[in-house]
Image 1 (cartoon, rainbow, N blue to C red):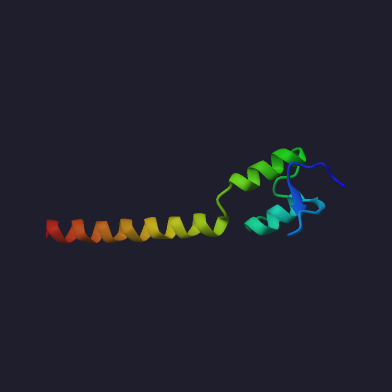
Image 2 (cartoon, one colour):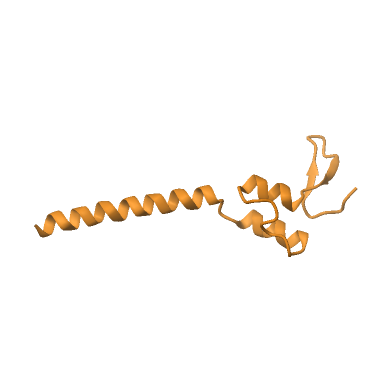
Amino acid sequence: VSQSRYPLKTINGKILGSLLPEIGEIMQGYPIGWTSGLVKTKRLSLLGNAITPQIAGSIYEAMEKNDKAEHQTTSQSLS
């Protein structure tokens, strides 16, 4: 059984194996192979610290909406 830094364990603590970077990519919403070219531990570390594309998109949309609202408010106050 793998001696990985990212072991997959059952409720009883039995080690089943280790997390594959490809599974991490899928879970985070990235395409399979997004982190290829790096060693496994670095890939998993990057995926664990990443912001998912869905969250980044939501933040962008909220910021864009806020900017439009501020622009409308500024335009109205200048009229």
